[in-house]
Length: 250
Image (cartoon, rainbow, N blue to C red; front, side, top):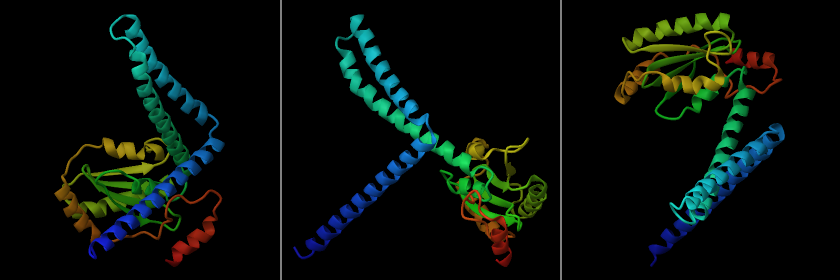
């Protein structure tokens, strides 16, 4: 019995922590919804629209099958399914519009590409700021199944040379492993921030996980030639001069 009490207490504590975390997540979602609703007037109409469309389609299909004599009363069976699908569709619309809003706000801000890379899903090894300037231009290194991807952000006339130098430095270490280079931006031959993750996902798979581990170990020895970058996109209106002074000191 004595041994059972600590186990019971631990389980109760785990349940309590889980409830607290669940409550915090719900609060975050609700806060995000309220903020998005204030900024995005089309959010509610879109969510209600996809919900009603899903319900009407499910009920209509069941009604058609009932009228034609295929299955009687199927519309009432499909109605709860339509409601469930409608709720999922509405949540999906909310998530996509929030994501689009976040990327729109981050677009063009120093550190935005590094932030987007940190949110990659899957087996990606991201090293932010392997090269950079005091103007907060930066090159980030990504190791994945395609090979090595160097992602640059900043003023095009500066990052092109920075990217070329880092690509040459990386090639000496990785041998024949493919190296891709990407410049994030909205000009010609650049990849918009909101499409960066999708672009990386579409690259061909050239190496396996073991080779990724080997590349990561070799490239870690190169170190970084960049000044400290901001953790995520810099807020609009932030003072660039004070940030640049901080970068120079580091």
